[in-house]
Amino acid sequence: MAQTITVKELVKKILSKETIFILDARNTDDFDDWKIEGENVEVINKPYFELIDGIEPVEDQLPKDKDIYVICAKGGSSEFVADQITEAGFTNNVFSIEGGMKAWSEHLEPIKIGDLKKGGSIYQFVRIGKGCLSYLIESNGKGAMIDTNRMIEQYEEFISEHNIQMTHVLDTHLHADHISGGRKLAEKHGATYCLPPKDADEVTYEYNHIQDGDEYQVGETTIKAVYSPGHTIGSTSFVVDDQYLLTGDILFIDSIGRPDLAGKAEDWVSDLRNSLYKRYKELADDLLVLPAHFMTHHEMNDDGSVSEKLGVLYKENHGLNIQDENEFRRTVTENLPPQPNSYQEIRETNMGKINPELEQQREMEIGPNRCAVR
Image: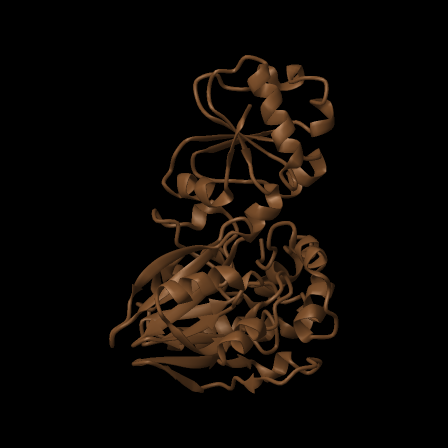
């Protein structure tokens, strides 16, 4: 019988640059929309229904000299296919990936970004299957989370292991591509939940307002709010200890934020340009940019983290080097990828207007993030 491997184990292998061969047994449309990727990852697609009677349709594409990993949507079909490969006489290791692409979508990998000037550390939680990035800032036993994902159990395990008392949970904006776990995490730990009020006209719950220039003290560390609209009208960045710039969905490593997820692209283009070309220009070039998303594995550093100095991005990021305003407007209104899956339902969930069951929430988040201009 084939073996199984957890997503956590697979992520470790991918981040350590191991050579990985994956057979994806989902429908081709689902595969084309979203798949496992990595620097040394080779992935092929052959739908499960074509392999029910045997692996002949894909046999000549399977390696005989390295491990084979099989994935499907939820983990059931991949077990069957992996067993078929083993029974066909393949003597190399064959693994079914537990939980399939749903588990891949939900795994959070904590990576230490660096130390803080006055003591403490900042960690980036990489949601490798979704391209989401969230942050834990800890100092003197106190902690703050920024842009929390829905799966708060993984944060709580880390918080408990490091004996951190949570004081603040912040969202840079009202998210449209994933469900925020910010309020839930704050409630469970007695922390203060904060959200930009310009994004919160329709929310149904109590929250603390984030205003431009607000400062949050977390242990010996200061987190300062910098109003930076454009992706949403309330989008706010955070400068941590004058070392790190958490940009939310305004600025990424290889692109810039899209302004259309609330249906107001034309209205918000000028805000986006002002945030990127004026507001950020006033900040120090040596700030390390830490975005809320990444688009591909090419944006990852050697350790799997995602970051770059602001000054470097002003030299290398095309979205920061469009001098003509009309060309900039065309770029951010005409070069947009498809809307994120279920983005309107996700926005309403984050507003507190609807409260879908867990399995429905998981379905809503399936697929890649699409928060950037192409």
